[in-house]
Image (cartoon, rainbow, N blue to C red; front, side, top):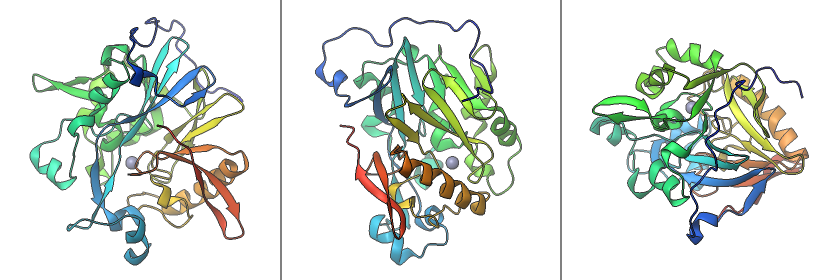
Length: 311
Ligand SMILES: [Zn+2]
């Protein structure tokens, strides 16, 4: 596969990804792909309008799998992924983070609780300083919110020794959102990444880190990068907002948030076919119950197949 962008020439090495320790729950991982141990990282729940989450799908259909609360919101996970191996500790997406004021916290029912990203990483023996790389699929707040944290009221990178990977095209779009998607971008989530060596722009599809490539989709927002972790035998596809929950596997189940829903439709048609044929593990960032599953072809199209256990 051609590589369209390059690794930094002198990539800083921070040594082993996690401090030594005997805690049994640090080794609860059930998945290894190539050089990486793969862990899910829960960053807390939140809730979005059910109608907006399912676009043109009528409520009697979506409420069966996603029961709404009294304000018509459905519960969502913000599930990051941690990869450890080859001297690296790589985080994919960062959840909502903790910078919300009370009004936004209430609108989006943000519940970091006992599973904010720092606490969840600590359970895996990882400190913020131990994270070497952060791949952000895109800069919407429920993906990039945890990329920065407040220190004395000022947003700074939450993983101070990490390099953050953001698609250049998406970065440019995030600077000039339209009135329709402006509410999804909070500059404090990403502008503080511009300083020093923190930010690494990626351009197009290709390898970002060993064993980790990205695929681009443009329907949800401009140049969303979906990481693909593969060793040639096992392939994990981090769906991000292309397929936010397992309920979104059917082709027309497309979020109303998407800027270009017909583009999403074609991107799903193409990528879900490849995923089914090549038995990819689909990782669902926002599904409240199911972290990962494979897909199956049936005479009614591609449907959710067997779950892939992560715990
Ligand atoms: Zn998004």
